[in-house]
Amino acid sequence: MQHSELGTVRTLWRLVPFARRALGRISLGIIAAIAAHLVALSIPQFLQSLVNSLMDGGIEALLPAVGLILLLGVLEALFVLLRRWLVLTPGTFVEADMRNTLFAKLQDLPVAFHDRWPSGQLLSRAVADLGLIRRWLSFGIVLLIANFITLVVGLIILFTYNFYLGLIFTVASVPIWIVGFKFERKFGTIARLAQDQSGDLATRVEESVHGVRVLKSFGRGGFAADQFASQASELKTTEITKAKAIANIWLYLILIPEVALGLALFAGVWFAANDQMSVGTLVAFVATAMVLRWPTESLGFLLGMTLEAKTATARFYEVLDEPDLIADPKSPKNIAEPKGLLEFHDVHFRYPDASADSQDLINGVNLRLEPGQSVALIGLTGCGKSTLTALTTRLYEVSSGSITIDGVDIRDLTRWDLRSQIAMAFEEATLFSSSVRDNVLLGSNEKSENDLLRAIEIAQAQFVYELPNGLDTAIGEEGLSLSGGQRQRLALARAVAANPRILVLDDPLSAVDVDTEAMVEEALRHVLTKTTALIVAHRPSTVMLADKVALMQDGKISAFGTHKELLASSAHYRHVITSLDEENKQREVNL
Image (cartoon, rainbow, N blue to C red; front, side, top):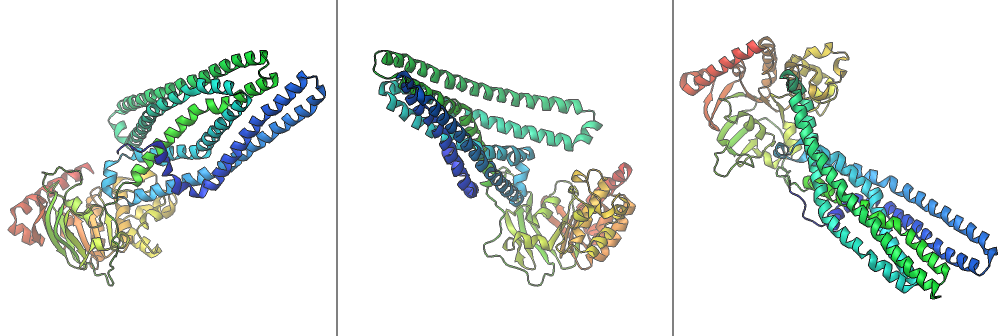
Protein backbone atom coordinates (compact mmCIF):
# COMPACT_ATOMS: atom_id res chain seq x y z
CA MET A 1 0.00 0.00 0.00
CA GLN A 2 2.10 2.90 -1.26
CA HIS A 3 1.13 6.49 -0.70
CA SER A 4 0.36 8.44 -3.85
CA GLU A 5 3.10 10.86 -4.94
CA LEU A 6 0.88 12.63 -7.47
CA GLY A 7 -0.10 16.25 -6.95
CA THR A 8 -3.55 17.21 -5.71
CA VAL A 9 -4.91 18.27 -9.11
CA ARG A 10 -3.50 15.22 -10.93
CA THR A 11 -4.87 12.88 -8.30
CA LEU A 12 -8.36 14.41 -8.29
CA TRP A 13 -8.34 14.51 -12.10
CA ARG A 14 -8.50 10.71 -12.01
CA LEU A 15 -12.10 11.04 -10.82
CA VAL A 16 -13.18 12.40 -14.22
CA PRO A 17 -14.03 8.98 -15.78
CA PHE A 18 -16.45 8.33 -12.92
CA ALA A 19 -17.72 11.91 -12.66
CA ARG A 20 -18.18 12.45 -16.41
CA ARG A 21 -21.90 11.70 -16.23
CA ALA A 22 -22.32 14.19 -13.40
CA LEU A 23 -20.11 16.96 -14.79
CA GLY A 24 -23.04 18.71 -16.49
CA ARG A 25 -25.03 19.28 -13.33
CA ILE A 26 -21.92 19.98 -11.26
CA SER A 27 -20.88 22.63 -13.81
CA LEU A 28 -24.34 24.18 -13.68
CA GLY A 29 -24.11 24.12 -9.88
CA ILE A 30 -20.80 26.02 -10.08
CA ILE A 31 -22.41 28.57 -12.42
CA ALA A 32 -25.34 28.98 -10.01
CA ALA A 33 -22.94 29.46 -7.09
CA ILE A 34 -20.95 32.07 -9.06
CA ALA A 35 -24.18 33.83 -10.03
CA ALA A 36 -25.22 34.00 -6.36
CA HIS A 37 -21.86 35.55 -5.43
CA LEU A 38 -21.97 38.02 -8.31
CA VAL A 39 -25.41 39.13 -7.24
CA ALA A 40 -24.03 39.66 -3.74
CA LEU A 41 -21.13 41.68 -5.21
CA SER A 42 -23.57 43.87 -7.18
CA ILE A 43 -25.35 45.07 -4.06
CA PRO A 44 -22.47 47.42 -3.00
CA GLN A 45 -22.74 49.06 -6.44
CA PHE A 46 -26.24 50.23 -5.58
CA LEU A 47 -25.16 51.18 -2.09
CA GLN A 48 -22.57 53.52 -3.62
CA SER A 49 -25.23 55.38 -5.61
CA LEU A 50 -27.67 55.36 -2.70
CA VAL A 51 -25.21 56.81 -0.17
CA ASN A 52 -23.99 59.46 -2.60
CA SER A 53 -27.61 60.43 -3.36
CA LEU A 54 -28.44 60.67 0.34
CA MET A 55 -25.32 62.78 0.94
CA ASP A 56 -26.59 65.13 -1.78
CA GLY A 57 -30.05 65.24 -0.16
CA GLY A 58 -31.84 62.92 -2.61
CA ILE A 59 -34.07 61.20 -0.06
CA GLU A 60 -36.58 60.19 -2.74
CA ALA A 61 -34.11 57.51 -4.01
CA LEU A 62 -34.18 55.61 -0.71
CA LEU A 63 -37.27 53.43 -1.19
CA PRO A 64 -36.51 52.30 -4.78
CA ALA A 65 -32.92 51.46 -3.77
CA VAL A 66 -34.05 49.47 -0.73
CA GLY A 67 -36.55 47.58 -2.87
CA LEU A 68 -33.92 46.79 -5.47
CA ILE A 69 -31.45 45.57 -2.84
CA LEU A 70 -34.21 43.36 -1.34
CA LEU A 71 -34.89 41.93 -4.80
CA LEU A 72 -31.20 41.18 -5.29
CA GLY A 73 -31.12 39.41 -1.90
CA VAL A 74 -34.03 37.19 -2.92
CA LEU A 75 -32.35 36.47 -6.27
CA GLU A 76 -29.14 35.47 -4.46
CA ALA A 77 -31.11 33.06 -2.25
CA LEU A 78 -32.77 31.51 -5.32
CA PHE A 79 -29.37 30.91 -6.94
CA VAL A 80 -28.14 29.25 -3.74
CA LEU A 81 -31.23 27.02 -3.72
CA LEU A 82 -30.67 26.15 -7.41
CA ARG A 83 -27.03 25.29 -6.70
CA ARG A 84 -27.98 22.92 -3.92
CA TRP A 85 -30.64 21.23 -6.07
CA LEU A 86 -28.23 20.78 -8.98
CA VAL A 87 -25.35 19.20 -7.05
CA LEU A 88 -27.26 17.11 -4.51
CA THR A 89 -27.88 14.02 -6.69
CA PRO A 90 -24.87 13.65 -9.07
CA GLY A 91 -22.36 12.95 -6.31
CA THR A 92 -24.50 10.07 -5.08
CA PHE A 93 -24.47 8.47 -8.53
CA VAL A 94 -20.69 8.89 -8.78
CA GLU A 95 -20.24 7.30 -5.35
CA ALA A 96 -22.42 4.33 -6.35
CA ASP A 97 -20.47 3.80 -9.60
CA MET A 98 -17.14 3.96 -7.79
CA ARG A 99 -18.31 1.55 -5.09
CA ASN A 100 -19.59 -0.94 -7.67
CA THR A 101 -16.29 -0.67 -9.58
CA LEU A 102 -14.30 -1.20 -6.39
CA PHE A 103 -16.35 -4.24 -5.40
CA ALA A 104 -16.00 -5.76 -8.88
CA LYS A 105 -12.24 -5.18 -8.72
CA LEU A 106 -12.03 -6.86 -5.31
CA GLN A 107 -13.88 -9.86 -6.69
CA ASP A 108 -11.53 -9.99 -9.67
CA LEU A 109 -8.25 -9.69 -7.77
CA PRO A 110 -6.50 -12.96 -6.84
CA VAL A 111 -6.52 -14.48 -3.39
CA ALA A 112 -2.89 -13.39 -2.91
CA PHE A 113 -4.06 -9.77 -2.86
CA HIS A 114 -6.62 -10.47 -0.13
CA ASP A 115 -3.97 -12.35 1.84
CA ARG A 116 -1.96 -9.10 2.02
CA TRP A 117 -4.68 -6.51 2.58
CA PRO A 118 -6.57 -6.18 5.89
CA SER A 119 -10.32 -6.27 5.31
CA GLY A 120 -10.82 -3.12 7.40
CA GLN A 121 -8.64 -1.12 5.01
CA LEU A 122 -10.76 -2.26 2.08
CA LEU A 123 -13.96 -1.55 3.99
CA SER A 124 -12.87 1.99 4.88
CA ARG A 125 -12.09 2.67 1.22
CA ALA A 126 -15.48 1.36 0.08
CA VAL A 127 -17.46 3.35 2.65
CA ALA A 128 -15.69 6.27 4.35
CA ASP A 129 -13.40 7.32 1.50
CA LEU A 130 -16.06 7.19 -1.19
CA GLY A 131 -18.48 9.09 1.05
CA LEU A 132 -15.85 11.82 1.43
CA ILE A 133 -15.35 11.99 -2.34
CA ARG A 134 -19.11 12.31 -2.82
CA ARG A 135 -19.30 15.25 -0.41
CA TRP A 136 -16.37 16.95 -2.12
CA LEU A 137 -17.92 16.58 -5.58
CA SER A 138 -21.29 17.83 -4.36
CA PHE A 139 -20.03 20.65 -2.18
CA GLY A 140 -16.25 21.12 -1.97
CA ILE A 141 -15.26 21.58 -5.61
CA VAL A 142 -18.36 23.68 -6.36
CA LEU A 143 -17.67 26.23 -3.63
CA LEU A 144 -13.90 26.11 -4.09
CA ILE A 145 -14.16 27.16 -7.76
CA ALA A 146 -17.02 29.60 -7.17
CA ASN A 147 -15.33 31.24 -4.19
CA PHE A 148 -12.01 31.55 -6.00
CA ILE A 149 -13.68 33.26 -8.98
CA THR A 150 -15.60 35.49 -6.57
CA LEU A 151 -12.34 36.54 -4.90
CA VAL A 152 -10.76 37.42 -8.26
CA VAL A 153 -13.80 39.40 -9.43
CA GLY A 154 -14.15 41.05 -6.02
CA LEU A 155 -10.51 42.19 -6.01
CA ILE A 156 -10.95 43.65 -9.51
CA ILE A 157 -14.01 45.56 -8.30
CA LEU A 158 -12.05 46.88 -5.30
CA PHE A 159 -9.41 48.27 -7.67
CA THR A 160 -12.12 50.02 -9.72
CA TYR A 161 -13.31 51.85 -6.59
CA ASN A 162 -9.83 53.06 -5.70
CA PHE A 163 -6.56 51.68 -7.02
CA TYR A 164 -4.55 52.43 -3.87
CA LEU A 165 -7.13 50.95 -1.49
CA GLY A 166 -7.33 47.86 -3.69
CA LEU A 167 -3.55 47.56 -3.66
CA ILE A 168 -3.37 47.92 0.13
CA PHE A 169 -6.07 45.27 0.60
CA THR A 170 -4.45 42.86 -1.88
CA VAL A 171 -0.89 43.17 -0.56
CA ALA A 172 -2.10 42.79 3.04
CA SER A 173 -3.92 39.57 1.98
CA VAL A 174 -0.85 37.93 0.34
CA PRO A 175 0.11 36.02 3.55
CA ILE A 176 -3.10 33.99 3.12
CA TRP A 177 -1.64 32.26 0.07
CA ILE A 178 1.65 31.57 1.85
CA VAL A 179 -0.21 30.04 4.81
CA GLY A 180 -2.41 28.04 2.43
CA PHE A 181 0.60 26.55 0.65
CA LYS A 182 2.18 25.44 3.93
CA PHE A 183 -1.17 24.09 5.11
CA GLU A 184 -1.53 21.90 2.00
CA ARG A 185 1.84 20.23 2.55
CA LYS A 186 1.20 19.51 6.23
CA PHE A 187 -2.49 18.64 6.14
CA GLY A 188 -2.18 16.15 3.26
CA THR A 189 0.14 13.95 5.32
CA ILE A 190 -2.06 14.13 8.41
CA ALA A 191 -5.24 13.38 6.43
CA ARG A 192 -3.66 10.29 4.86
CA LEU A 193 -2.49 9.03 8.26
CA ALA A 194 -5.97 9.49 9.73
CA GLN A 195 -7.61 7.55 6.90
CA ASP A 196 -5.10 4.69 7.21
CA GLN A 197 -5.58 4.55 10.98
CA SER A 198 -9.35 4.52 10.47
CA GLY A 199 -8.94 1.48 8.20
CA ASP A 200 -6.77 -0.28 10.80
CA LEU A 201 -9.39 0.44 13.45
CA ALA A 202 -12.11 -1.03 11.21
CA THR A 203 -9.98 -4.16 10.84
CA ARG A 204 -9.68 -4.41 14.62
CA VAL A 205 -13.46 -4.16 15.05
CA GLU A 206 -14.11 -6.77 12.36
CA GLU A 207 -11.63 -9.23 13.85
CA SER A 208 -13.04 -8.76 17.35
CA VAL A 209 -16.62 -9.27 16.19
CA HIS A 210 -15.78 -12.37 14.15
CA GLY A 211 -13.63 -13.76 16.95
CA VAL A 212 -15.98 -12.85 19.79
CA ARG A 213 -16.49 -16.52 20.74
CA VAL A 214 -12.74 -17.02 21.14
CA LEU A 215 -12.32 -13.81 23.11
CA LYS A 216 -15.16 -14.72 25.42
CA SER A 217 -14.08 -18.32 25.92
CA PHE A 218 -10.58 -17.23 26.94
CA GLY A 219 -11.80 -14.26 28.94
CA ARG A 220 -9.81 -11.87 26.75
CA GLY A 221 -12.54 -9.32 26.11
CA GLY A 222 -10.73 -6.78 28.27
CA PHE A 223 -7.49 -7.37 26.42
CA ALA A 224 -9.23 -6.81 23.06
CA ALA A 225 -10.87 -3.67 24.45
CA ASP A 226 -7.47 -2.33 25.56
CA GLN A 227 -6.01 -2.96 22.09
CA PHE A 228 -8.97 -1.22 20.49
CA ALA A 229 -8.70 1.71 22.90
CA SER A 230 -5.00 2.06 22.09
CA GLN A 231 -5.64 2.22 18.34
CA ALA A 232 -8.63 4.51 18.86
CA SER A 233 -6.41 6.80 20.95
CA GLU A 234 -3.88 6.99 18.12
CA LEU A 235 -6.65 7.92 15.69
CA LYS A 236 -7.98 10.48 18.18
CA THR A 237 -4.54 12.07 18.45
CA THR A 238 -4.27 12.28 14.66
CA GLU A 239 -7.76 13.77 14.36
CA ILE A 240 -6.89 16.36 17.02
CA THR A 241 -3.76 17.22 15.04
CA LYS A 242 -5.97 17.64 11.97
CA ALA A 243 -8.34 19.87 13.91
CA LYS A 244 -5.44 21.99 15.17
CA ALA A 245 -4.11 22.42 11.63
CA ILE A 246 -7.54 23.56 10.43
CA ALA A 247 -7.94 25.83 13.47
CA ASN A 248 -4.56 27.44 12.76
CA ILE A 249 -5.40 28.25 9.18
CA TRP A 250 -8.83 29.55 10.27
CA LEU A 251 -6.99 31.97 12.55
CA TYR A 252 -5.03 33.38 9.65
CA LEU A 253 -7.99 33.32 7.25
CA ILE A 254 -10.02 35.45 9.65
CA LEU A 255 -7.27 37.65 11.04
CA ILE A 256 -5.46 38.58 7.82
CA PRO A 257 -8.58 39.84 5.93
CA GLU A 258 -9.61 41.83 9.01
CA VAL A 259 -6.18 43.48 9.18
CA ALA A 260 -6.26 44.11 5.44
CA LEU A 261 -9.72 45.66 5.69
CA GLY A 262 -8.66 47.78 8.67
CA LEU A 263 -5.66 49.16 6.80
CA ALA A 264 -7.78 49.84 3.70
CA LEU A 265 -10.51 51.48 5.80
CA PHE A 266 -7.97 53.70 7.56
CA ALA A 267 -6.59 54.85 4.24
CA GLY A 268 -10.11 55.19 2.79
CA VAL A 269 -11.22 57.54 5.58
CA TRP A 270 -8.16 59.66 4.90
CA PHE A 271 -8.98 59.74 1.16
CA ALA A 272 -12.63 60.66 1.87
CA ALA A 273 -11.62 63.37 4.35
CA ASN A 274 -9.39 64.88 1.69
CA ASP A 275 -12.12 64.65 -1.00
CA GLN A 276 -10.09 62.12 -3.02
CA MET A 277 -13.05 59.68 -2.98
CA SER A 278 -16.73 59.90 -2.10
CA VAL A 279 -18.29 58.49 1.04
CA GLY A 280 -20.50 56.29 -1.12
CA THR A 281 -17.44 54.79 -2.80
CA LEU A 282 -15.87 54.10 0.59
CA VAL A 283 -19.06 52.43 1.79
CA ALA A 284 -19.19 50.32 -1.39
CA PHE A 285 -15.52 49.36 -0.96
CA VAL A 286 -16.09 48.19 2.61
CA ALA A 287 -19.32 46.40 1.69
CA THR A 288 -17.55 44.56 -1.16
CA ALA A 289 -14.68 43.58 1.16
CA MET A 290 -17.26 42.22 3.63
CA VAL A 291 -18.85 40.14 0.83
CA LEU A 292 -15.40 38.65 0.19
CA ARG A 293 -15.06 37.55 3.82
CA TRP A 294 -16.99 34.28 3.35
CA PRO A 295 -15.11 33.18 0.21
CA THR A 296 -11.85 33.95 2.01
CA GLU A 297 -12.71 32.29 5.33
CA SER A 298 -14.14 29.23 3.58
CA LEU A 299 -10.78 28.51 1.97
CA GLY A 300 -9.67 26.75 5.17
CA PHE A 301 -12.20 23.96 5.32
CA LEU A 302 -12.51 23.78 1.52
CA LEU A 303 -8.76 23.20 1.23
CA GLY A 304 -9.00 20.63 4.03
CA MET A 305 -11.88 18.85 2.30
CA THR A 306 -10.03 18.93 -1.02
CA LEU A 307 -6.89 17.42 0.48
CA GLU A 308 -8.92 14.70 2.22
CA ALA A 309 -10.65 13.99 -1.09
CA LYS A 310 -7.21 13.74 -2.70
CA THR A 311 -5.98 11.15 -0.20
CA ALA A 312 -9.31 9.28 -0.45
CA THR A 313 -8.94 9.18 -4.24
CA ALA A 314 -5.35 7.98 -3.93
CA ARG A 315 -6.45 5.21 -1.53
CA PHE A 316 -9.27 4.20 -3.89
CA TYR A 317 -6.91 3.94 -6.85
CA GLU A 318 -4.37 1.97 -4.84
CA VAL A 319 -6.84 -0.90 -5.15
CA LEU A 320 -7.94 -0.19 -8.72
CA ASP A 321 -4.32 0.11 -9.88
CA GLU A 322 -3.41 -3.23 -8.32
CA PRO A 323 -2.37 -5.48 -11.22
CA ASP A 324 -4.50 -8.57 -11.67
CA LEU A 325 -1.87 -11.23 -12.23
CA ILE A 326 -4.51 -13.92 -12.75
CA ALA A 327 -6.48 -12.71 -15.74
CA ASP A 328 -8.43 -14.23 -18.60
CA PRO A 329 -6.45 -14.99 -21.79
CA LYS A 330 -6.86 -12.66 -24.76
CA SER A 331 -7.82 -15.60 -26.99
CA PRO A 332 -9.50 -18.12 -24.67
CA LYS A 333 -10.00 -21.74 -25.60
CA ASN A 334 -12.94 -23.90 -24.67
CA ILE A 335 -13.51 -27.56 -24.01
CA ALA A 336 -16.16 -28.78 -26.42
CA GLU A 337 -16.92 -32.07 -24.66
CA PRO A 338 -15.65 -31.98 -21.06
CA LYS A 339 -14.53 -35.36 -19.78
CA GLY A 340 -12.78 -34.41 -16.54
CA LEU A 341 -9.16 -35.40 -17.23
CA LEU A 342 -7.07 -33.42 -14.72
CA GLU A 343 -3.27 -33.38 -15.06
CA PHE A 344 -0.43 -31.66 -13.21
CA HIS A 345 2.76 -31.24 -15.27
CA ASP A 346 5.89 -30.44 -13.24
CA VAL A 347 3.94 -27.87 -11.19
CA HIS A 348 5.93 -25.46 -9.03
CA PHE A 349 4.54 -22.77 -6.76
CA ARG A 350 5.80 -20.26 -4.24
CA TYR A 351 3.91 -17.37 -2.69
CA PRO A 352 4.65 -13.98 -4.28
CA ASP A 353 6.13 -12.58 -1.06
CA ALA A 354 8.40 -15.60 -0.44
CA SER A 355 12.13 -14.94 -0.19
CA ALA A 356 14.21 -15.62 -3.30
CA ASP A 357 16.32 -18.29 -1.62
CA SER A 358 13.39 -20.26 -0.17
CA GLN A 359 12.32 -23.61 -1.60
CA ASP A 360 9.14 -23.84 -3.67
CA LEU A 361 6.14 -24.94 -1.62
CA ILE A 362 4.96 -27.04 -4.56
CA ASN A 363 8.17 -28.41 -5.99
CA GLY A 364 7.55 -30.32 -9.20
CA VAL A 365 4.21 -32.13 -8.87
CA ASN A 366 3.28 -34.58 -11.61
CA LEU A 367 -0.14 -36.19 -11.26
CA ARG A 368 -2.84 -37.52 -13.60
CA LEU A 369 -6.49 -38.02 -12.64
CA GLU A 370 -8.43 -39.98 -15.22
CA PRO A 371 -12.03 -38.98 -16.00
CA GLY A 372 -14.29 -40.32 -13.26
CA GLN A 373 -11.34 -41.31 -11.08
CA SER A 374 -11.13 -40.26 -7.43
CA VAL A 375 -7.72 -39.61 -5.92
CA ALA A 376 -7.03 -39.04 -2.23
CA LEU A 377 -4.21 -36.59 -1.58
CA ILE A 378 -2.50 -37.21 1.75
CA GLY A 379 0.65 -36.09 3.51
CA LEU A 380 1.95 -34.58 6.70
CA THR A 381 0.85 -31.09 7.75
CA GLY A 382 2.54 -28.36 5.72
CA CYS A 383 3.49 -30.49 2.72
CA GLY A 384 1.37 -28.34 0.34
CA LYS A 385 -1.86 -30.33 -0.10
CA SER A 386 -4.30 -27.43 0.30
CA THR A 387 -2.13 -25.14 -1.81
CA LEU A 388 -2.11 -27.70 -4.62
CA THR A 389 -5.91 -27.88 -4.64
CA ALA A 390 -6.13 -24.05 -4.75
CA LEU A 391 -4.05 -24.04 -7.93
CA THR A 392 -6.67 -26.06 -9.81
CA THR A 393 -9.11 -23.11 -9.98
CA ARG A 394 -6.38 -20.45 -10.27
CA LEU A 395 -7.01 -19.04 -6.82
CA TYR A 396 -3.23 -18.88 -7.03
CA GLU A 397 -1.17 -19.07 -10.22
CA VAL A 398 1.45 -21.75 -10.74
CA SER A 399 5.02 -20.40 -10.67
CA SER A 400 6.05 -22.83 -13.41
CA GLY A 401 4.73 -25.97 -15.04
CA SER A 402 1.07 -26.33 -16.00
CA ILE A 403 -2.27 -27.80 -15.01
CA THR A 404 -4.53 -29.07 -17.79
CA ILE A 405 -8.13 -30.17 -18.08
CA ASP A 406 -8.78 -32.51 -21.01
CA GLY A 407 -5.43 -31.43 -22.43
CA VAL A 408 -6.17 -27.68 -22.26
CA ASP A 409 -3.99 -25.50 -20.02
CA ILE A 410 -6.26 -23.90 -17.41
CA ARG A 411 -4.57 -20.55 -18.17
CA ASP A 412 -6.03 -20.77 -21.68
CA LEU A 413 -9.58 -20.94 -20.28
CA THR A 414 -11.57 -18.01 -18.97
CA ARG A 415 -11.81 -18.09 -15.21
CA TRP A 416 -15.59 -18.44 -15.46
CA ASP A 417 -15.26 -21.42 -17.81
CA LEU A 418 -12.59 -23.03 -15.62
CA ARG A 419 -14.57 -22.61 -12.41
CA SER A 420 -17.70 -23.97 -14.04
CA GLN A 421 -15.72 -27.18 -14.69
CA ILE A 422 -14.42 -27.47 -11.10
CA ALA A 423 -16.22 -27.14 -7.77
CA MET A 424 -14.43 -26.86 -4.45
CA ALA A 425 -15.32 -27.50 -0.82
CA PHE A 426 -12.90 -26.22 1.79
CA GLU A 427 -12.17 -27.33 5.33
CA GLU A 428 -12.99 -23.81 6.50
CA ALA A 429 -16.60 -23.67 5.34
CA THR A 430 -17.69 -20.11 4.52
CA LEU A 431 -21.39 -19.39 4.22
CA PHE A 432 -23.09 -16.12 3.36
CA SER A 433 -25.82 -14.07 5.01
CA SER A 434 -28.56 -15.49 2.86
CA SER A 435 -30.99 -18.41 2.82
CA VAL A 436 -29.97 -22.07 2.91
CA ARG A 437 -31.28 -22.39 -0.64
CA ASP A 438 -29.15 -19.52 -1.96
CA ASN A 439 -26.04 -20.81 -0.20
CA VAL A 440 -26.34 -24.34 -1.59
CA LEU A 441 -27.19 -23.18 -5.13
CA LEU A 442 -24.48 -20.51 -5.17
CA GLY A 443 -22.33 -22.38 -7.70
CA SER A 444 -25.18 -23.87 -9.74
CA ASN A 445 -25.96 -22.23 -13.05
CA GLU A 446 -29.41 -23.78 -13.49
CA LYS A 447 -30.63 -23.37 -9.86
CA SER A 448 -32.56 -26.64 -10.14
CA GLU A 449 -34.69 -27.74 -7.20
CA ASN A 450 -33.74 -31.35 -7.93
CA ASP A 451 -30.03 -30.45 -7.74
CA LEU A 452 -30.68 -28.73 -4.42
CA LEU A 453 -32.48 -31.67 -2.82
CA ARG A 454 -29.99 -34.17 -4.21
CA ALA A 455 -27.02 -32.20 -2.90
CA ILE A 456 -28.56 -31.90 0.57
CA GLU A 457 -29.17 -35.64 0.65
CA ILE A 458 -25.62 -36.51 -0.47
CA ALA A 459 -24.08 -34.14 2.09
CA GLN A 460 -26.34 -35.53 4.83
CA ALA A 461 -27.57 -31.98 5.48
CA GLN A 462 -31.20 -32.91 6.16
CA PHE A 463 -31.00 -30.85 9.35
CA VAL A 464 -31.92 -27.82 7.19
CA TYR A 465 -35.53 -29.06 7.01
CA GLU A 466 -35.79 -28.65 10.77
CA LEU A 467 -34.69 -25.01 10.71
CA PRO A 468 -37.45 -22.41 11.39
CA ASN A 469 -38.13 -21.69 7.70
CA GLY A 470 -36.59 -24.80 6.19
CA LEU A 471 -34.63 -24.10 3.01
CA ASP A 472 -35.62 -20.43 3.19
CA THR A 473 -34.10 -19.94 6.63
CA ALA A 474 -31.65 -17.06 6.59
CA ILE A 475 -28.19 -18.07 7.75
CA GLY A 476 -26.42 -15.55 9.96
CA GLU A 477 -23.11 -13.92 9.09
CA GLU A 478 -20.63 -16.60 7.94
CA GLY A 479 -23.07 -19.26 9.15
CA LEU A 480 -21.83 -18.96 12.74
CA SER A 481 -25.32 -19.78 14.02
CA LEU A 482 -24.67 -23.35 12.77
CA SER A 483 -22.21 -25.87 14.13
CA GLY A 484 -18.91 -26.50 12.35
CA GLY A 485 -20.14 -29.85 11.03
CA GLN A 486 -23.37 -28.31 9.73
CA ARG A 487 -21.47 -25.57 7.92
CA GLN A 488 -19.16 -28.14 6.33
CA ARG A 489 -22.05 -30.26 5.12
CA LEU A 490 -23.74 -27.23 3.52
CA ALA A 491 -20.44 -26.27 1.86
CA LEU A 492 -20.13 -29.83 0.52
CA ALA A 493 -23.72 -29.67 -0.72
CA ARG A 494 -22.88 -26.42 -2.50
CA ALA A 495 -20.02 -28.13 -4.35
CA VAL A 496 -22.13 -31.15 -5.28
CA ALA A 497 -25.07 -28.98 -6.46
CA ALA A 498 -22.80 -27.35 -9.05
CA ASN A 499 -22.67 -30.65 -10.96
CA PRO A 500 -18.98 -30.20 -11.88
CA ARG A 501 -16.88 -32.45 -14.05
CA ILE A 502 -14.14 -32.18 -11.41
CA LEU A 503 -14.70 -32.05 -7.65
CA VAL A 504 -11.93 -30.79 -5.36
CA LEU A 505 -12.49 -31.48 -1.68
CA ASP A 506 -10.05 -30.00 0.83
CA ASP A 507 -10.90 -32.13 3.89
CA PRO A 508 -14.52 -30.91 3.94
CA LEU A 509 -15.64 -33.32 6.70
CA SER A 510 -13.09 -32.63 9.43
CA ALA A 511 -15.76 -31.30 11.83
CA VAL A 512 -18.26 -34.10 11.12
CA ASP A 513 -18.68 -37.12 13.40
CA VAL A 514 -17.58 -40.54 12.12
CA ASP A 515 -21.09 -41.92 11.59
CA THR A 516 -22.20 -38.92 9.54
CA GLU A 517 -18.96 -39.01 7.58
CA ALA A 518 -19.60 -42.64 6.72
CA MET A 519 -23.05 -41.81 5.36
CA VAL A 520 -21.66 -38.87 3.37
CA GLU A 521 -18.91 -41.03 1.92
CA GLU A 522 -21.39 -43.71 0.94
CA ALA A 523 -23.53 -41.14 -0.86
CA LEU A 524 -20.45 -39.59 -2.49
CA ARG A 525 -19.52 -42.96 -4.03
CA HIS A 526 -22.49 -42.60 -6.36
CA VAL A 527 -21.46 -39.05 -7.30
CA LEU A 528 -17.81 -39.88 -7.83
CA THR A 529 -18.50 -42.66 -10.35
CA LYS A 530 -18.98 -39.99 -13.01
CA THR A 531 -17.00 -37.13 -11.49
CA THR A 532 -13.24 -36.76 -11.28
CA ALA A 533 -12.35 -36.03 -7.67
CA LEU A 534 -9.25 -34.79 -5.88
CA ILE A 535 -9.75 -35.25 -2.14
CA VAL A 536 -7.43 -33.95 0.57
CA ALA A 537 -7.82 -36.61 3.25
CA HIS A 538 -7.13 -36.42 6.96
CA ARG A 539 -8.94 -39.65 7.87
CA PRO A 540 -8.14 -43.20 6.80
CA SER A 541 -11.83 -43.71 6.02
CA THR A 542 -11.68 -40.88 3.47
CA VAL A 543 -8.66 -42.52 1.85
CA MET A 544 -10.71 -45.71 1.44
CA LEU A 545 -13.25 -43.72 -0.55
CA ALA A 546 -10.77 -43.00 -3.35
CA ASP A 547 -9.71 -45.17 -6.27
CA LYS A 548 -6.08 -44.12 -5.93
CA VAL A 549 -3.94 -42.36 -3.35
CA ALA A 550 -1.29 -39.69 -4.02
CA LEU A 551 1.28 -39.28 -1.27
CA MET A 552 2.68 -35.77 -1.02
CA GLN A 553 6.07 -35.21 0.56
CA ASP A 554 8.21 -32.05 0.52
CA GLY A 555 6.08 -30.45 -2.16
CA LYS A 556 6.17 -33.48 -4.50
CA ILE A 557 4.11 -36.58 -5.19
CA SER A 558 6.44 -39.24 -3.81
CA ALA A 559 4.13 -42.23 -4.33
CA PHE A 560 0.96 -43.02 -6.25
CA GLY A 561 -1.22 -46.11 -6.24
CA THR A 562 -3.98 -47.90 -4.38
CA HIS A 563 -4.13 -47.90 -0.60
CA LYS A 564 -2.94 -51.52 -0.45
CA GLU A 565 -0.09 -50.91 -2.88
CA LEU A 566 1.24 -47.97 -0.92
CA LEU A 567 0.90 -49.78 2.40
CA ALA A 568 3.13 -52.48 1.02
CA SER A 569 5.66 -50.30 -0.77
CA SER A 570 6.03 -47.00 1.12
CA ALA A 571 7.27 -46.62 4.69
CA HIS A 572 6.42 -42.91 4.63
CA TYR A 573 2.87 -43.74 3.57
CA ARG A 574 2.49 -46.11 6.51
CA HIS A 575 3.79 -43.35 8.79
CA VAL A 576 1.29 -40.84 7.39
CA ILE A 577 -1.64 -43.28 7.67
CA THR A 578 -0.70 -44.00 11.27
CA SER A 579 -0.56 -40.26 11.97
CA LEU A 580 -3.97 -39.77 10.38
CA ASP A 581 -5.38 -42.58 12.50
CA GLU A 582 -4.04 -40.96 15.69
CA GLU A 583 -5.42 -37.55 14.67
CA ASN A 584 -8.76 -39.16 13.88
CA LYS A 585 -8.99 -40.77 17.31
CA GLN A 586 -8.18 -37.46 19.00
CA ARG A 587 -10.76 -35.66 16.84
CA GLU A 588 -13.43 -38.20 17.81
CA VAL A 589 -12.68 -37.53 21.47
CA ASN A 590 -13.05 -33.77 20.87
CA LEU A 591 -16.28 -34.22 18.94
